Image (cartoon, rainbow, N blue to C red; front, top):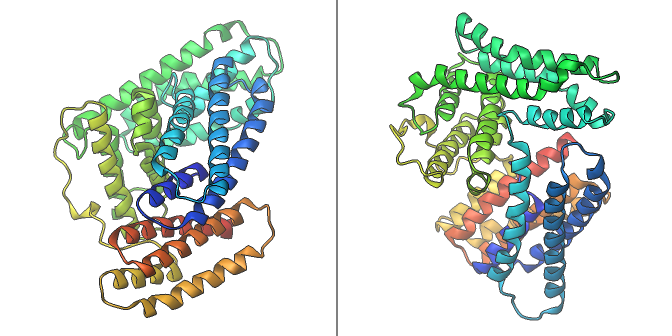
Length: 430
């Protein structure tokens, strides 16, 4: 999952707390993030009354968090401009985290009730709104248009089972698909009498589907590599993808289902503290174009996040932890564009004493030239701003590392280079 702007503010604060001197990177990131929250708040206030997915209490909660974050960022921006001495970076981190955590927990909670499928959960809110006598708006129609994608998603998930098991699974989903089709047909006419039980039928059918799915996969995965059968199933599917005996749609469907199941079954605060959803989203973004090393890195991160979530969620132990080399990422095998990869290698050689600062300097100057070229591109394009911010931060870390080589700065460089690769890829595809 991509870092958000507020995550990058926190990253800058953490680096400054650890001794970095890149103050300008924080100044720019704070200003951009503050303006983004202001715009987000304005948009939310204008749109939520017509949004069937947000209740009054949820809207108040989200609005309060957005206001608090905007106020904190404004105060930090002012402190950065007015203070001539280093600020208490830890204190600012502690001020930002509570409203940010509150905002993310509320959004997670809205997505995770009452079924294991996020799109269905959203549709249930629209269904209640429609049954209360409100006309179907553009949001409802757009969401209903996505229901064929649900069938494709379930089809990829069910395909791994034998014919008899597939029929049993589909029989539990048929009521859901039938109701959505009836709703689409009756969207602009009077409510059919049977619609009074639609929400209940949808929830019951999906619970039956989830229970059946668990019953089918649990025996073969009870002694799998993690404490969570659905993750074991995902890891098994990843093995099959690497071997060429399974396709990408099945892997992506499993990752999406796993994320939705965790949102339903694990308390929102616990899930928000873990990296599980982030890792599952990374699995969803994997494709045949990714190198095997990248694939293994993501799966290794998934196992680690499973262990951490099990610990946070109170699981007593994990069984049969996987030790196969298939999930052990090779050291320094980063999936980066050539120029960024060569910069990392130069920096690693410098930190390990295999080369001098003079060898690193041309790479820094080359990257600075790229930043200068980005700076003259048209303003107002989000992808350009994101790429420029990542590249500028990379230059600053390289300059810090050139002045004082350290292993911690090398780790920071690796993180920001990954951000650069993502933002540059987004820019090229926009």
